[in-house]
Each structure stands twice: as structure tokens, then as C-alpha cells.
Image (cartoon, rainbow, N blue to C red; front, side):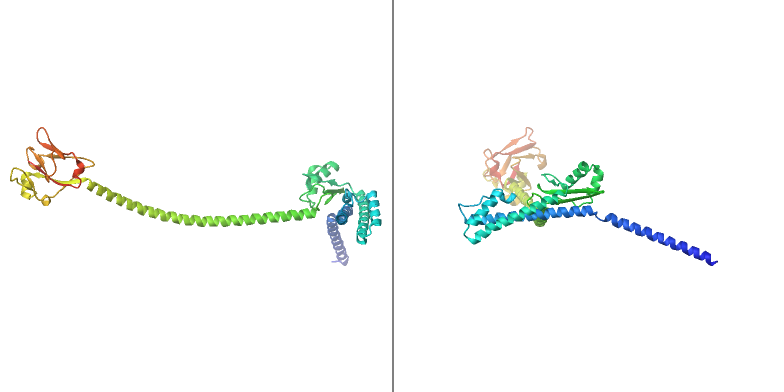
Length: 390
């Protein structure tokens, strides 16, 4: 390849490289410059900071004067200096002349020096106020915060009403600023807008504390409330854990009581059954029904010697019959069940039961059956009877 061609291609490559470098440097420079704060904004912020500093110094002088005059008045009862309007406005000409006369008349050198210090501090405060007026004259007048104002609302009103910006663009611009979370009445909001750049700052103004002090106080309050909430949460958690433990304990007690109740119910059922059985037994009688001949043969009754049947060995026969006198007071006897054609008579043994007074016997019309009726059932409780049928 000819040397001239190689030289031309190398030159083109060099120029292309230079152009790319210039484009990159330009882009970086534009990005850096676009992120720089304009000098007007920096100057505006410096002036606002100076206003805040002067306000702080004036406040300190006011407190200093108030303290000095208070000391003097305490030591001069009946001859106090009138402090009306003194701390807020500085000394009037009349007050300055009064203090000058007091200085001349005061014999105590320490109090004379104290009064002179009041005059000197008042002079310093006056100079500061003059400087404050000069600085403020170079700024757009601040917006004094009223009750219910917010930094966002004040800025939005400034950009939309004073500058004429639409609300959407204004909000986008405000979002780039560090806003004060809370405005107290008396705070001064300083706004700046120029060359498409917006700036806003808040100073103490006539409020009793600075924005930074308010922010710290708010943070302390939030931290205190958070700590309180954490403590309350931990307390509640502890109470919940105690309640859960108590619940588990009560559930265990309930389970034990249920088991005890079940055991007691079983015992009660058994006792009730036993009681029913005992009660039934106490209110029942046992009996055996047989013919005179069979009962005599068994020895339960004895043949009469003088025409009257006597009681033999009652236990010689089995008393398989049972009657609960609470439920029934009758025993029905069928002649056929004893191998008899009819019933002629019935006697109860032992013979000490009265047939008409304690019991009675009713024969059916055909005498095929008879009914023993216990007139005084209580008298037969636990009795063991033999009923002879003939």
C-alpha cells in the first residue's frame, strides 16, 4: 500500500479521536455546570444567613439588657428603671437620657458600670438593627409565617402567584429543596427565583426559637414518643405473655376440674344408683305366695292347734316376690298359678299384721283371683311375708 494512503487514514483517525474527546468533555462540563448553584442563589443564601445571624445577635443583646436592668432594679427598690418597651425596641432617646442621668448620679461604681453597660449594649443593638435593615433592603421581603402555614404552601404560593408558574412545574421545583417540616408563627420564609433557579430559606424572625431548635425539639419529641410507644409495646407484650401463661394455667386447671367433675359425676351416678337401690329396698317388701298345704309342708306356717294358723319359719321358703310400695300397694294372686280352681281365703304371715287395719283382701266375683291391698304400706317396709292361699 502506498505511504500516502496510510498517512491520510492516520490523520482521519486522529481527528475522529479529538472530536470524541471534545464531545465527552463538553458533556461533562455541561453536567457539572448544570449542577452548580448559581452565584445569585449563593449570594441570596449568604444574605439570609446574615439576617439570621444579626437577628440572633439582637436577641442576645435584648436578653443582656433585660438581665442588667433587672439586676439594677432589684438593688434599687422604689427607684426602678421603667423597662416598658426597652428589650424589644432598644432604648428611646428619653430612656437613654434617663440612664445617662442615673450614671452621673450613681455613687456605687459597680452599678454605675452596670448602667453604662446597658447604654453600650443598646448602642450595639441599634447598630445591628441598622445593619439588618441594610441587608433586608437587598432582599425580597420575607413571608412571615402565620398559624397553619407550611413551608410547601408558602413556596407554592410564591411560585404560582408572584412568579406566575403553573402548579405542576412549581411542585417539581420545590421538590428539589430541603423544606422545613414545620413553621411556627413568626418564622420568616425567604424565597428567591432567578434564571430558572428557585431557592428558599427559613429564619427565626419573631418566633421564640430558631428552625433548627424547633427541628431538634420535634425530633426529641418524636424520639420520646417512639420510646414511649416501644415501652408501651414491650409492656403490652409482657402483659400478653403473662396472660398467655395465665390462660395456659387456667386451661390446665379447667382440664383438671373437668376430670374431677367427670370422676365426681361417676361417683354421684354410682351413689344415686346405690341410693335408688337402697331407697327401693327400704320401701319394698319381699314375699312368697303358696298354698296352705305347701307352706305347712315347708315349715313356713304351722297347722292350727285350736283352729288358728300360726307362723312357722318364715325363712323356710324363698321370698322371690318383691313390691316397691312407693309405686304399688297391691299384689294380685291367680288361683291357676297355684294349681287351684278358686281362691277361698288368704292369710298373711307373720300373723301380727291386722287383716282389716293393715291390709285387706278382695276376691274377684268368680274367685279365680284375689288382690291383697296394703292399707298402711309404710308398715310393710322391709317386711318379709308369706301369703297363704286356700
